[in-house]
Length: 467
Image (cartoon, rainbow, N blue to C red; front, side, top):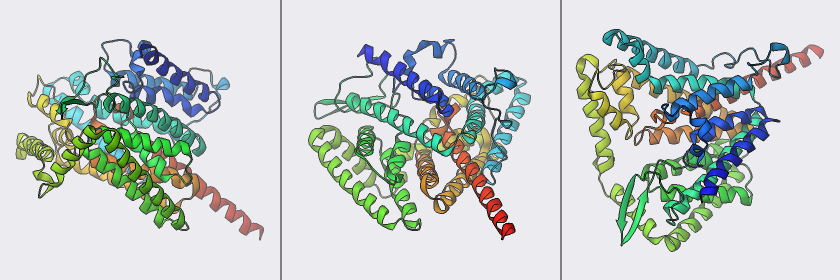
């Protein structure tokens, strides 16, 4: 097993580097593999994690910058560059979604400034604000690369990421479902004894792109045995996560993607066919896991029953805690800070920052409220709403690969919004450089669509002149 832990990440890295020789966007494989570090043992490749005093997000940000520099050949003289793109952060802003994003980023910078002035310590304010800084900086770098890449390159790259995630999902199932302890030595979140059998709940090495994989499978126009297998393994990983919110998010994602396909002109038969295929797979899957993994499945059913037995969602124990965290943070802010937040003080400057950091793992909106206030919460909600509008618009007006990408992104973003009520999603401090990758991918698709519309209009104008 030790050999696999070392060989697997090395092989994956070499594969992405080899693919980048023909499709340069595959250089992004490095930061994406770093984002999946525990799940594919990428933490074993020590040269990428030096110096040791850095946090994982620091290393990811560093290598994302390096990838961006290499992608655009910025270390070479101008005459020798293969990519001579002037706008290395991408074309003009896509309204309205990127206008909202810039506004939220600008507001975050203002709050960093006010925190620095209040405590007379700029360095600490910047350090405490690394999460939003890395989120927005990572988005800009990803935007530049992805807007330059073609649609086919993007699909090929996402296909590779989904396949790698499926490998990680398979290992996760072996570890958590069959107790093979693939990830021996890594901290487990929880041990539960059910019917005399010890079960583990683990999030630290959970595959990072399960919801992307679900959307990518459901939105595809054609399925092969490969994609049936990817879908089944992904479902197994979601099932064995014992995470009710993740299961609900996946179900809603599937339903929304099928609904979009149904609304797309001429896709009625394919939608019905895909719905039947998914129903058959789900039926066989549920039957198989109850036979092969009765204890694990029984435990999951008990958790689902506990949630549905309540009269309302807030009466569920888990959601009750989240509501309590929100009320507590709001009370701490008081009337004087509730609208604008307190910014980014350190624990030494405000002891409550430690508690809000702990609560953030259970609900994304707590750190937003604490740092940016209700204004920041409204801005973040508007950000997700604007990008969802863009994804839905592109999904309903595109065809072929363009529709595939935009539909996948729509389902993915909806699922993230749902999970934000139960965990920190984009505010996960170990993954922030790629936290807004779904926004960057969607923006790149919107830019390609804009170029295609403009070219089509130009061609039509030329034809009219000729006539």
